[in-house]
Image (cartoon, rainbow, N blue to C red; front, side):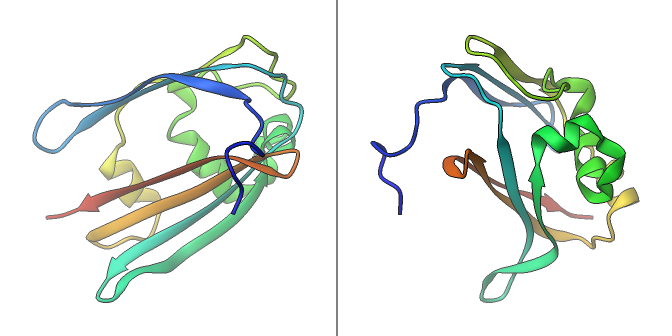
Length: 151
């Protein structure tokens, strides 16, 4: 376990909100500002499915060097698919470095259930995305969320 004093203060989250659009759709806004330059970042993400007994590994468990990926997104098929869902809604769209003072956004993003089901072989149920973000091999952020696909 890493204590807060060991984690570098890379930035701060200024906005993190989920707004209900209707009974079945939400809109997500996240905005943060970097306090340090980032020249190396890696994301470890795994998809899970909730079944009896809790969360179970499902389908993907990937590690992505974000700087290399953004330099050549076509080189990694699954991360490219995942990024395609948010690309139009974020300004995280160029390779490293990301400079101190930069504002990073995911704005007005509404996850598309039909888009996910069309691309990924999922059935109805509850799925989770658990991810760890590392900068220079030090854990700096965890993002965990879930979605429920129902008929």
